[in-house]
Length: 357
Image 1 (cartoon, one colour):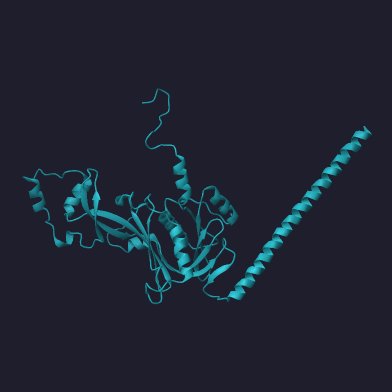
Image 2 (spheres, rainbow, N blue to C red; image 1 turned 30 degrees about the vertical axis):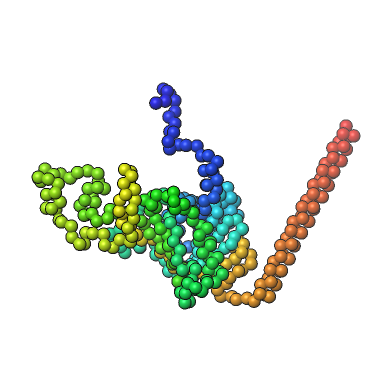
């Protein structure tokens, strides 16, 4: 106990961060999720749901306003070591989502074809009706990014722009060391599936259950309390007289079986189930840009250009950049000349006043 009047210091939970911890914090990908322009209430709800997907490596209470510019967000991202930005916009016809890597790009623009919020997904289910925020990051599962979408043939490689999309998605989530991680600590899965020239996003919650045990026994094990056995001679009588185990009580719809060590270092067979918790998105790639929402267009679904046309555009952009740098140098030189003239005039005025005195 601390001395009287002293402040208590926690030693187990309030540990000071070491240099290795700071390096890991800088390496883990983090994202700002925000909107630009006017969007509907459903898109705002979708932004909140996607923040829950990217939690804990995102800002949940990011304050947005129309006055803040992208330069302000970029400066804040550099201060907080934000590696990516996810921006949602809406027009009269379509909604769009951008995946951007800070601070120099590239920028991937997708058109949102269909979407469902978290509440809509949960209300459509029978049993799993609620979802609470989980601190651990989700497991990333990618499907179809290594095959041709037209034939679904794994021998045929995918096009270059789809490989870029796969690399961008993979860079947005932290890497997991399979050997050192405990399977029971993984609570969520996010799925990116590429099929028929579309990208499908699904968000699942992972539940672990004991395999081959009656529902009554599961409730007793989870509660860690014995039921009232005053009316029964033994525990076996309680189990026999209270709804024996039927075929419907067994875990027949489980995804996979897994052996996990408990606290007593004993292996237990656990069944894994996935519960979809939303949001649900269906995207279509629209455009890829080299820079941060600008620069050379690597891919465009609507407009296709030849290599000569692309080279001409690059030359024009380089000339514009050179003109900008020259103008800045000229402005700096002019400012220096003006400041020198002002200093000389002030010095002359001071000398005149001294001579008059």
